[in-house]
Length: 185
Image (cartoon, rainbow, N blue to C red; front, side):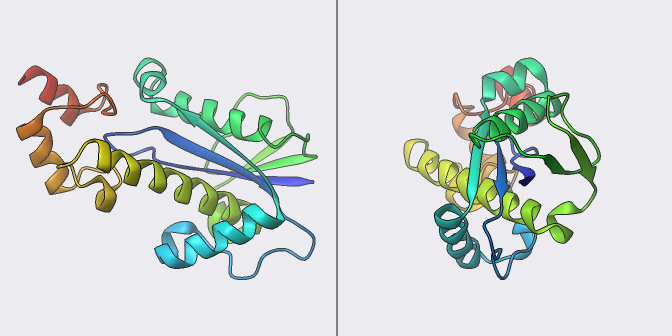
């Protein structure tokens, strides 16, 4: 009953921040690692196995929440929502990073935890795949920004499109390149 928690999407210019909480199943899951170290295909395979065999919850903070709270507090909110979405109270929550949200669960922050704690690795994979899928779908609704490839990060194609096409409702107004784009409209 130990849950791992991680997030995806703190740095992008667009889209929500997504957090996941995972309580690993009996026997664990082979091949877990920090989601950033895995190929997209491997992440998808592990996502399917984790979601079929383990207890997990997903929490998000919207672009509006990011802009009103700031990215740190929006991330904490997404993490809290992810643990609440588990549907059970874990005995302890292990959080990737250097701080835990102010919540009701006993928890520990572990820097680099997504590479060393399997339950956090699993949460990292669930969060990343979920957010990537959101941005791939958003790319179909807002073509030209390259979100299927860059997932909302400040890649050159995204920044050029921001200048050329302007911001979308999925852009984070509180992030400097987006704020500049709003001023230049």
